[in-house]
Figure (cartoon, rainbow, N blue to C red):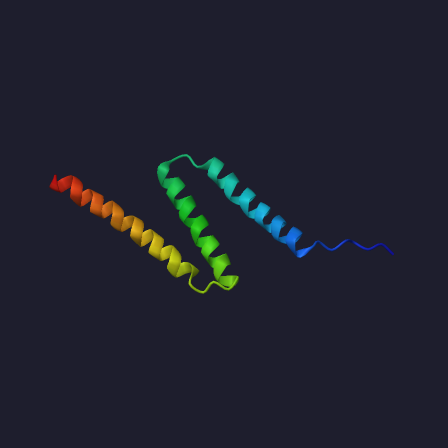
Length: 85
């Protein structure tokens, strides 16, 4: 009877991370426009937040939303400054 070696938790986590990286790197390589890049990065961030929530970070989606809102506010402020100058 042969036994298959069970991967350590660290090896399994590394395998999952490598699979995630491969998944997103393949999509990144296929991006052809800025709009596609934004959609892909948003999807990646949302997927990471969902995984983080499943891992116990209940605030992950809220943290992502805060980052996006802060970025948008910075862009809006810069636009106002450009038009007021």
